[in-house]
Amino acid sequence: MINLIMNLINELRSYFVTEKMEYEVVGECKKCGKCCNYMYSFDTYTEQEFKFMQALFPSYKRFYIKGKDEDGNFIFACKYVSKEGLCTVYNKRLKMCKIYPNKKILYPAKLHEGCGYRVIEKDFEDYLKTHPKK
Ligand code: SF4
Ligand code: SF4
Image (cartoon, helix red, strand yellow):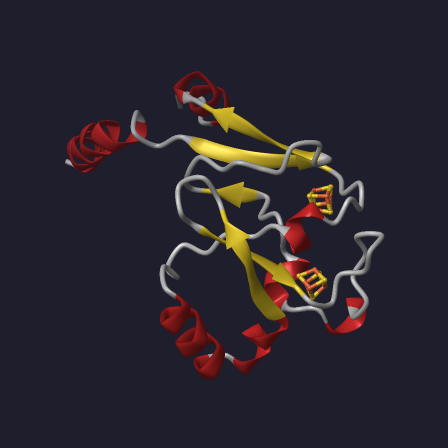
């Protein structure tokens, strides 16, 4: 009975495994400063939204709108990055700065050109290697 239940669960899971692509981030920071000078936000499309976010999260007041990319998306920068690309408030940097770039992400990511990190896509074959058949 337990086997049957497990088989059913595995059958159900199999419908999702092929969709599940893992992205692992490896490498190390080269201290170029691009990620502090050119940032994107998933959910900020207007200046009003940006101001609202800053009112909601005062720590975001360190960010400012630097310009727009060719698709019209805002590019943000931090006022605490030095000309050399280093953080001038390193010990007080935000959590999002500390964890950047996340080692495991759930969506395809694009890092800055020349960034010391790179994204490795783990496909179904990799999944099978890390989840051997019992
Ligand atoms: S873009 Fe990459 S290499 Fe440059 S500072 Fe950011 S994490 Fe480091
Ligand atoms: S607080 Fe420091 S690490 Fe974070 S974005 Fe600003 S300059 Fe970069």
